[in-house]
Length: 395
Picture (cartoon, rainbow, N blue to C red):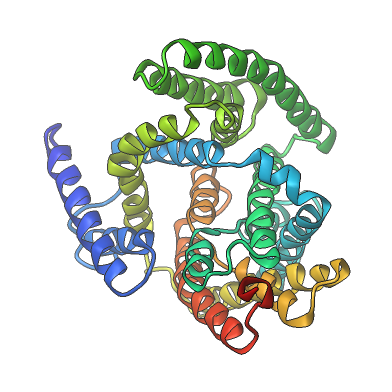
């Protein structure tokens, strides 16, 4: 490949991603799905116009980091405190049940492996993919129906935010085991050290950003320095603590989420992220996906993966909600609202593939899960609220 050929690749990625994203929006599907389909069309799955290369992969990695940084910036710590124990317990169940069910599914299809073996950690990784919740679609549906600010709506929103935080911690532990010599105590110590380091560094940077924000509000130097913090923490997490760089980026976002100009920072980050780097990331998912290895066992696994991922969230979050006095139909609404998967599931899968924990064929199962859950969840929620309208919203 000539050096300037990458320019045509980028042109195809940007135009293809935007066109398919608009098509997806027309059919009421998430725009992310359209961008992934653009990658499938451009890649070896359909037309074979282009394939993954190191430069595109590096751009995609920046895209992942910016997405997680933005997710951290959008975290509402006040809302998390207000939701209290209820949302935390529901989120824990929403992580634990899919994690266990995902690991069991992999083991049932490919065989149970001994503790500490490669197969054992692959099973754990498949479980960790199932933990993440993408609440964006659910929030839009609840807004449309007028139920977002009800007790059930706020529980779903808060639990989904906590769910992602716990999911990132689980991912950190699982990815740390990629080295067969790694021990649980070592991983735990590294995670605790990184959290302590982030807390101290975060407090210092939070105070510094508050002062800068007061003196130079809404100036471009603030998002520039914020992105510097994001990339620095992502690097330190991976290089010195053996923790995924996306964890560092997410924590950088949480450090700054209460700064007065947090929304301004997020808006400026999105100009870079969602206009360029994020589309490159989502298209690269499609470029890496191949149906060549789609044999009977993988097809069966993909179907089982979608069913288990959705049902385990429904059961895990729904059953535990009953302990907090929710009615049966409200428990089902909470479980259904937590079923959607999106960017975080893709990010986790991409990270695992980069580290050699799974191969590209598993992207098929994850993409299928995102498409089915993104279409199925809104339909199920609308049906539930039509049959069991929330009296709290009516009042």
